[in-house]
Image 1 (tube, rainbow over the protein chains, first blue to last red):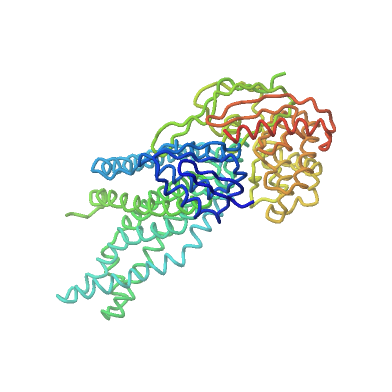
Image 2 (image 1 turned 135 degrees about the vertical axis):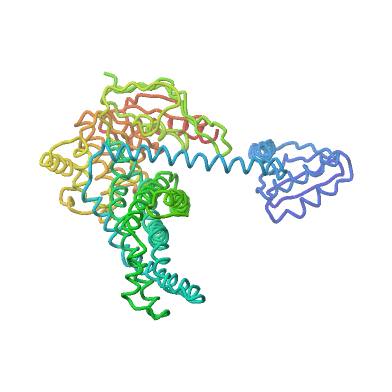
Length: 365
Length: 245
């Protein structure tokens, strides 16, 4: 039997089965009550679907807000249960309203500072544990060799190409500026200093952070998601010794070599720029470079390499270890690993440059 | 003999606003050696957390754990096999970690792989195996050190029903033969009633024990018997009450 509605002015009686098709009739019957108090009688109502119940509930709520009173009588247990659930939902606490006052903005800044501090602290603790494992753990030759190949050998083409191009660009730009007042002969020295002191180590570090730091974070993050790290821990492995130190050792081994290769590639770029744009003979370029740089300039890149290796391997591994939940967090960890690594590389580079001007023989400012 | 005991174990996590949220406890539980215990409960009630605390993967905020031996095996929900290793190497790995000689590692791994019916696949890599075979490998890896306590975190949840039933039978037999104490986390009531000597039902917010019962069902268990379905329905009712809450 379809739903029937009888309205005698004070009482609205619902009988039969009410479905979404009766929505308009129910709305009309309940929504236009002339009296202040209305009784809704469900005694003969066999069933109603949720759309009707929701409509009745919302009409009652709106009407009661304006002073009308509804009394619901004769509900069977099913209908009663639906309305009881609505009552529970009504009692739920309202969601917190976002506060966009000045205080909120300060809180937001505070939260971010706190989160950054937690990351820095976590990174420091992680580095401590990794170094402890490095000096006390077992050396894993085959896995270290694998990372040396991945992070070192495979990176050679891109590092040499990009540093050579940097050498060409810098050589050309420096040569052009200097030729304005006849100082082209100083280009090789300027270029060699820039390349060896900063450009080659930094470019190499940025490239290795992009290639290997992200790979470390993704690899460890995936292991974390797949519970492989937990499995290793349960078996009694020191995960720092097993997961982190082979990556550290591999980068310690390859980074100085990559930076040295980048130094020579950059200076070779300068040689090409000198020949192409300044018509400078190769012997002159090489002689000028030899006059300018000392072995310390090349060693400096190697020293920087150890710092950068530590930063990239620790940051990549730490971000991977921080992964919680599903694959989406692996992507976030990878991005964080690259961003934080590059930031720290530049920060440490700036600090080392301050030290450099005090310790390089023959450098006076 | 007691295998392990929890006394007043509690665990809280911080929500994004920094507020502490107690997710577990206090939990008191004592498990006898050789007992097959199923931790049953709805998602989020702290079953896995309890397992991770027992395995020292996480630490409790308060309470004590008393354990006879630290020799644990753990079987994870997704197997957690190492993808770069063969089946045999995966199973040998926990033995290597304990410093067992390579020759002995291989023979014990081979023996365990025979028990789980995967000896012919010992040179395969995990990705070459079906889900059921991967879980059998994980089971072999968990049991190869003959642990005093084997912890299993919903290991058969992602398998089809038939494979799951086969593995339940295999697990039960293997653990019986090795007299291993088992803590098996599941939200599958039938799985728990079929395998367990004892079922502990956990409720949530915070995770706590709401029912602890030693099953009197005889072995072998018949899933269609009236006794079995009676116990099943009783636990289902408890479970539904918890979910409704």
